[in-house]
Amino acid sequence: MPDDILKHFASAAATYDDHAKIQHTVAADLLRRCPASARRILDSGCGTGVFTQMLASTYPDAQITAVDFSDAMLGVAATRQAPNVRFVLADIRDIVDTGFDLIASNAALQWLPDIDETIESLHSRLAAGGILALSYFGPETYRELRSALIAALGLPVTLPSDSFASTSELSSICQRHFHAVSFDTVEYTETFPTLRALLANIKATGTRGPGASPNVTWTPGLLRRVEAEYRAVTGGEIVVTYQVSFCVGRAI
Image (cartoon, rainbow, N blue to C red; front, side):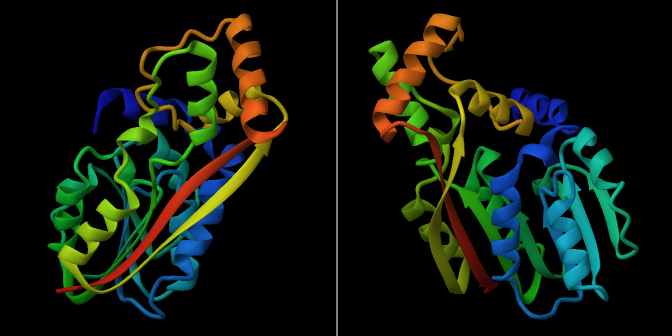
């Protein structure tokens, strides 16, 4: 995991749950796509443990291993007491345990550099016939912010979400490693009162990643220009689109 991404998530551990409205909504939608029963579960990239808690309540008789690469995030997760959960500090690709009936991952895998390698690695940790269920934020996430920055700066701008796998790429990868694959993409939206409030939300959830390229210095003047362009793009509101793909597949 890149150090800058780890740093941002660690610094957001105390504020994440109060601001991650979309991630929590996606977690509930992912849970509805999970199988009716499972005995051994791996929560890959558990963060502050909100989705882990959902899994623990839904599968009270299961043994759940919840993994995250951020010690600070796990510190928050561990406060959500559940007798059937153990937390492990590790990169999800380094987990050595195998034989899971269900591996679930909410809003985490897009931050890893090689999604094909990651999904192949998770597949190898499933029991025969085990299920992988994941939600994955796509490259159209924050598209309004990207467009506003390009318009205000007058030059090409890329955001961290530009490096996320496209829906077609992710679907192809899931189809290659799993069978009986269910795949769908949903666009969620969230509205903020100002551009500054949106940027504060990104900071509070740790989802800044490596930042925009080229690097953006948010002066008061640039904030005003980007907000004006943003409202022009969206028809007057600071509305954000989050593109999320859901994949559920059975191990081959």
